[in-house]
Image (tube, rainbow, N blue to C red):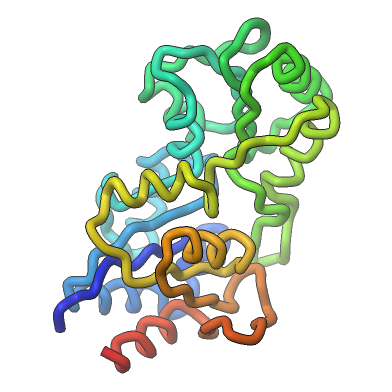
Length: 249
């Protein structure tokens, strides 16, 4: 079979839940690779560094390269001029992405941007610093708007919930870098010649990202969204989506 393009595959809720592989996901990725279908793992989770994501994939039984991983952290960093200054309210993935672009991370004070991403150390103090910098003119960048994060124990607060607090405190709306934003689309398009499919567990982010890219979308029901609107292609999990697609080729 001649591949029609790459598959863009979300991680949380599609490949795994809190690092635990969803049944059939590893085999589904192996099946796509056996048919020479290019893959790109595209995640709105900005907390892990690239190496952490690669190690998590490897522990799950999936070998991947750094060029096969695109994160909302990388998309956020791409919006800031190289060698700029940024207040960073986020974990390691965002900090790594900023440092790769030689952006100086500052705790407070003059800054070109404020980047807010996933973190478990959000506090009143960090909220105040972020809001103050935004009110002083810094560009306000949110890695992604996802309000929740899927885990085996149910939904937990997502990055969007943290960003919302900064939006209220600063009186400014964030520019979102991750799916379905233009920054993420630009990163993906810079790595691929053609795209066949976006697979994700959230219509508002993954589905809208597919619309922005002008490609097919399959909603898997193993993560956040559990109901399927009319006209949306769906599968119970990634392995089913792959089987359906291959059968149609």
